[in-house]
Length: 272
Image (cartoon, rainbow, N blue to C red; front, side, top):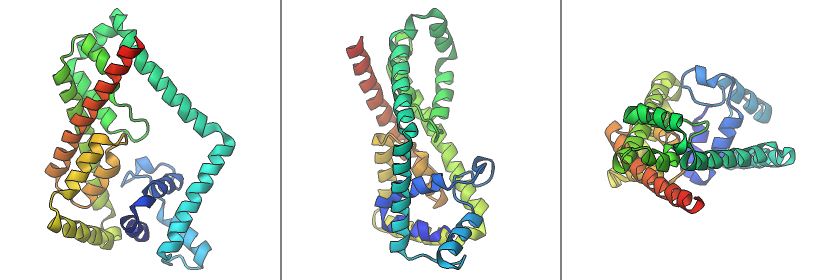
């Protein structure tokens, strides 16, 4: 049922944003309570859509028709959001609130004895735990490095702070890897052919460029301000090496958080 979408995603990576948008728009209620714990459309819904479109619940849409539908549906959702006005201003407001909160924490919260003492008492283990939550958060991911100046001001050492944040975020990515494994095991017979095809494609890629998938994951983790789980979960589903995936995201997280900390430190210094 999902096979045509996966094959289309491999052929046309440019459709990934629209496909992710469609998957989220068509997600079933309570998807987070049932394996594989991903917001994927239900089988019954997909069969109903195919039957209404082609008169056959088992029809396989041609790639060009499927691509046109995905792009069209994404455009319609974008226009509807624009008409309502709500989602766009809510997102802008959320970003503004987050930015204001980060500035307040880094500039003013350090002067509040209770806040300073509570954060210092949590120590590096508390920082690690918060970073794990930040690393495994697809809904509202907030980089802990946003608060790097505050952490340094209350006594955290710069290098251990960055390494602790990176390690915690990698711990969150490890949870994502476990979700990918659970997805592969839970769907089992349903996605056997798709899994075999994807693994064959990945094996062919690694036969030519053995480390290329992990190199691309490293670049994604280092420079893309998007949750790593969007890539880690599919790589786990395709049986990519746990050591390779975790090494790539750890190194990427170190660079990402170092860049983020440098940028926030500069901004707070300019603001102050």
